[in-house]
Image 1 (cartoon, rainbow over the protein chains, first blue to last red):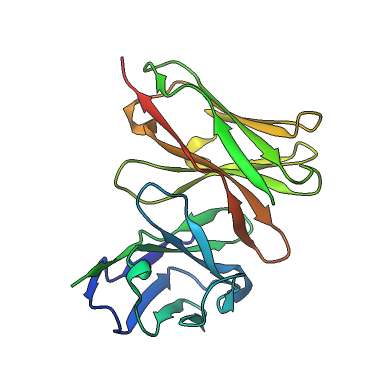
Image 2 (cartoon, each protein chain N blue to C red):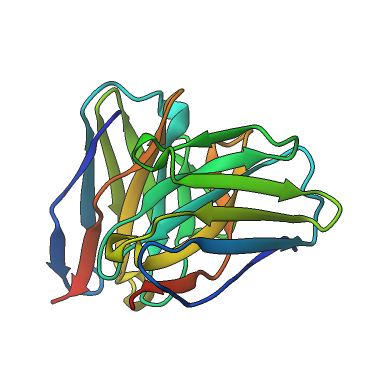
Length: 108
Length: 118
């Protein structure tokens, strides 16, 4: 099973600042299978980025994804008030789908 | 617009069986893989497994032996059955559709809270 470790666990930033979220895998991940979701309290996760760097429909371009192998990054270029949430990375190999533990982006 | 809706009891007694159904609207259940994912209170997401439109399943190893999935294409529904539940199974349970082309979950149900308690 591939373990995904997200860091930091929490990030305190102000609106307008840049957020950089990390997702590290215990083994190499097929970049086609690395996905990012956003989750707000009481809501289901929302698809943000798939295939490491492709934005889902309706996702603003301040969200970007990058990486390869075992290191992946989600960047929010300028935080808007609605971006404060928990972010999860997820991967799928041939056997098991796993999620990272999440990074909470909170208002400073 | 594709919509998924979970349904089932919100409270299950320890050692008993949890049964949830996900009803899909806006598209056929055919040709997709349908997943269950859960989230304990205040914690992260755990993949439970999937069932295909044709009935093939894959269950996360920690839950093999306790989790079963069924599909009913005539009703556009699929189900999760989890037996011998404990307090550790208390969670919000989500159903979601796997997009085979983009390798992600684009459509999710709103989630249903299940509490295991006597």
